[in-house]
Picture 1 (cartoon, rainbow over the protein chains, first blue to last red):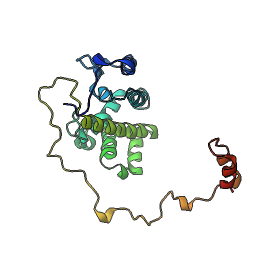
Picture 2 (cartoon, one colour):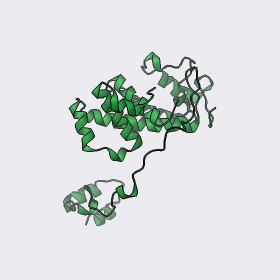
Picture 3 (cartoon, helix red, strand yellow):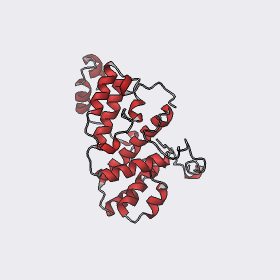
Picture 4 (cartoon, rainbow over the protein chains, first blue to last red):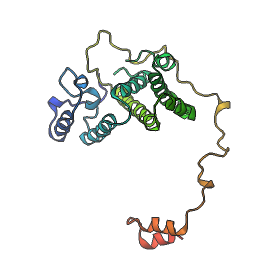
Length: 89
Length: 144
C-alpha cells in the first residue's frame, strides 16, 4: 500500500489530468503500458505535484529515447541497478 | 529481472553485457571505485566514453527512481505469481572500505581550487560585470 496519497489518471482533474494526458500521449513501447489501464505506479507516485511529475519524466524520456546504448542495453543497466537496490517494483 | 547482477558482471558470455552489468554494479554500490580500468575495459569491447557516461547516468537515475518507488510504497503494475519481498535479508550490506583504505583528505588532489592559477583580471571583470543580477558598483569592486 502506498505511504503517500496517490491520485490516478481516472480520478485526476485540472493540471494533473493534463500532465497525465501529455505523458500518456508520448510514444512508448506497449510492454511499458500497464495492463491495469492507469499510468505506471512510478509516475502516479508523483501525483501530488503535477509540475514535478512533468519535470522528472521529461528527463526520463530524454535519457531513454536516445544515446549510444540500445534498448536492451539500457534495460540491462536499469534492471541491474534495481536488483542491487532491492527495489522489486 | 536480473537474478544475480554480480554473476552477470562476472560470467555472462557476452563481453558487452558483462561490462555494462559491471558498470551498473559499480555505480550502484561504490561509484567512487570506478577507475580508468573500467573505461579501458569498456573501450576494449567497443563501448566508447559516451556509452560509459550513459550507463553511469542511467544507473544513477534508476537509483533515484528505486528510492522513490520504495519510499512512496507504490504497488506493482503487473500481476505476479509470488509477491516479491520488500527487501532481501540474505543480501549482505554494501561493502565499505576499511578505514586504512580511506583517502587522506590532506593529500594533494588532481583538481584543487588552491592549486589553480587566478584567472586574468580582465576575464574576471568581464565574467562578474556581465551578470545583470550584480549591481555594477559591487561587481567592479569584486572584480578588482
